[in-house]
Image 1: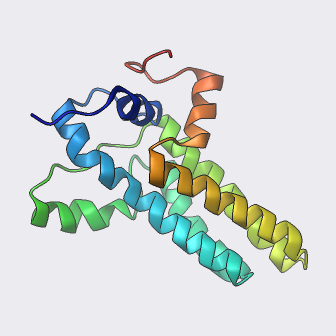
Image 2 (image 1 turned 90 degrees about the vertical axis):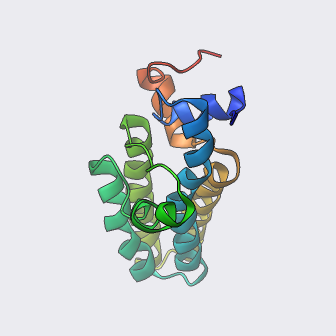
Length: 162
């Protein structure tokens, strides 16, 4: 029987992935890291190269993740990998995860703007901190913007109140 640790469950539920049994959460949990990982790498490349164009070109993908109940990069898993692996589809994004995508959209815009306006130090600080902020859920399932969503609006139903 597949299980998920209470800490992992709490971190994923804080992102809005509630109402999933242990087996499903165990299967899809690692794949919920794919879109943030792609965004993290893309933002890191744009930051290292001090490229507003690279950073801004990620913005539409992040914005779509904020508007729709899925991220465009989830299609890699949902329409490809999961069929090869025999796994269930990724669950829909709820408000906390979509909020994280909205924050990333603004952050990308600000980092790109800093480089564009000739403020590389600010661009590196913004881009670097965005990359680190994206690294956190990729490695731990803890999403910083979703955490703040929970502080402001309350955790999604079914989340522990620890």
